[in-house]
Length: 254
Image 1 (cartoon, rainbow, N blue to C red):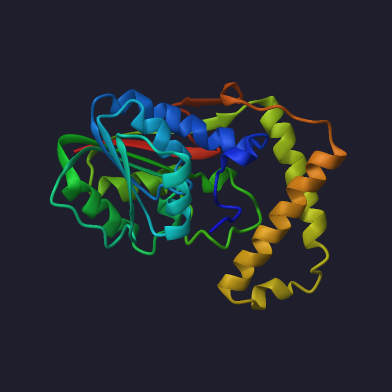
Image 2: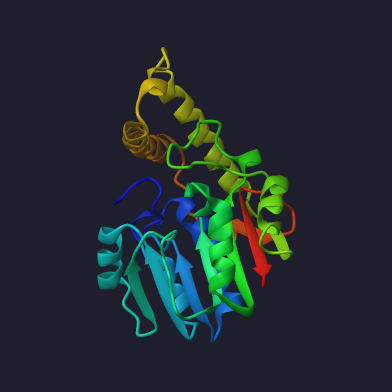
């Protein structure tokens, strides 16, 4: 399903596309010649990037329509797709690397997910996770997210299943911060139309539909009434600073 949550190649002008791709390029350092399991593969664009360097990539997602499109657009001999809820996914094989980018915040039981990931990893295998940093996320809740984490909360969660890990932060440069400031300002103006806060009464699915629509309108307005922005991987960096990061990235070892 195409939603505001998907990072698609046709959104290449949007910084969120490059923000997500930066995390995938970070993962490339760990996948060369390895067997890789990607849980929550989304549009498949990043899966194709991993497959070009890995020994084999198995991409798992519960959105069968997205995977059907991914198979057509991003075919690679080292890449295969499975439509399955990631919490119920099982495999007789183990993997050298497990990757779950922008997935943890969607899960009803993240602790169980991490335990399953530990079981699916080879000895000395690597788990890479990215998730929004709630200390620096939008003040307007994302109805697709069940929970977002501070760096401290994420450390506590990961340490339950992986005692050995490193935490990184993904950061945007000045151009991104300027874009984001204008995006949030426009979002605030749009939400003022709901001056009675009636959105709080909507069921979650309707909130998600409203979120998708308002995100589309917001991005259109920002692009129409502000100076055009050209973004790339160079607008983002990954380092060990976490509190001011946009996203948090965990590299855990079994």
